[in-house]
Amino acid sequence: MALVEYILGEFPQIGKIKDEELRKKVVETWLEALKRGGWKNFDGMPFTLLVEDSGPFSAHVRRVTDAAIAVAGGRGDLDMDMVIAGALLHDVGKCVEFELNKDGKGVKSKFGKLVRHPVSGAGLAMEMGLPHELVHIIASHSTEGECVKRTPAAVLVHHCDFIDFEILKAQRGL
Picture 1 (cartoon, one colour):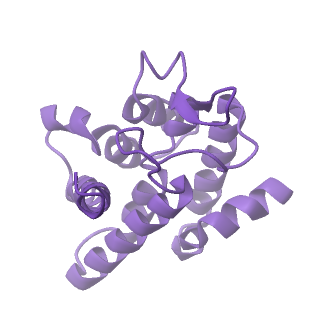
Picture 2 (tube, rainbow, N blue to C red; picture 1 turned 45 degrees about the vertical axis):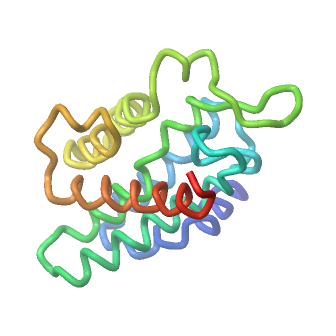
Picture 3 (cartoon, one colour; picture 1 turned 180 degrees about the vertical axis):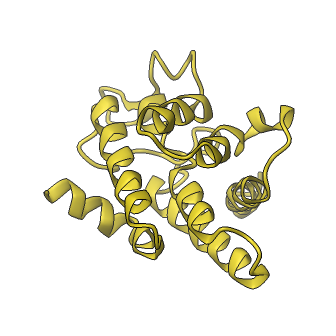
């Protein structure tokens, strides 16, 4: 139960998902991802390896989710539960893509060198019985999504994710 409370504390936006079953599955998906990746929590997990000291992983997920909620709320024509769940889970695959090395630094795992997080995250979402539209958001939120026609919610999550990444790069002068 403590880990459930931890997930809810890290991602308070879960509480904004109106569909109770979807809300429950989002939490269960995070729990399973942490377990499979061997993580006790998100401490030390970077949100990207492309920028040194990228900051806390969970803070990135919260920023992407908050941005997606703001845009979807302003539009009023998107399924808010899908937007929130998609933003919350877009990087769930990083729990198996990354691991901590002996020095406590986040690095690519052996599995992560072969399978990027959009693919592993989408696979996990399917296993957890999440809706196909949500699997699509996870699978298509990064460069892997350039080959498919994204749904409106997937377009939103993709851009919110990259906005956060591009702001980080600009702040570092990259």
